[in-house]
Image (cartoon, rainbow, N blue to C red; front, side, top):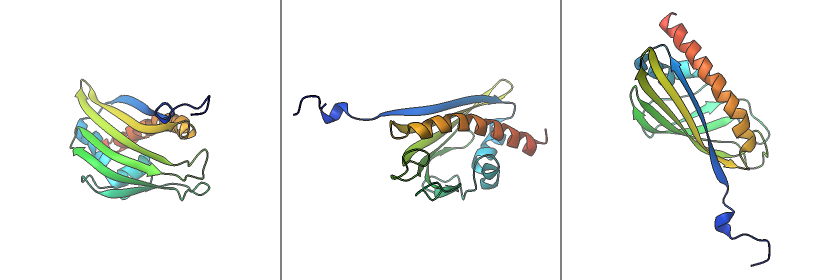
Amino acid sequence: MSAGVRPPETCEPRTREIVVEEVLPHPPALVWKALTEAGLIARWLMPNDFEAVVGRRFTFRTRPMGDWDGVVHCEVLEVVPDERLVYSWVGGSATNGRYGSRLDSVVTWTLAAVEGGTRLRLVHAGFRSPGNDFAFDAMSGGWARVMAAIARTIAEVAGD
């Protein structure tokens, strides 16, 4: 081995996750509805063809960027009504060095009834550093804005 070259096991990129948590003044069933109905999801995130069925493949669609077609390919991995929703999140292009870079990750939504409503926790895991650093930085703030949009959507549905 050449001097200055680290063995492959120490060259592994590290992974990071985005965590956003909010207490919403609504029951878990209403929060769950906002997370699992395609029309409501489109209001707070992107157009989609989501169904809360394990194994269901679906897509989110956004503005294309570079060689990326703007499609996020997903698959529902876990569904526990009113408690937990997990899906894969794969998109981007290997030729996009910044926004739109290849991302293979997992989104987990956890709901817990608390006094005054529901604690909604999002964990978006699998950002590989340094390759996904731009996406991580952009989506960190983005998911916080999405959480606020979910709250607004639920308030509209609830008639608040």
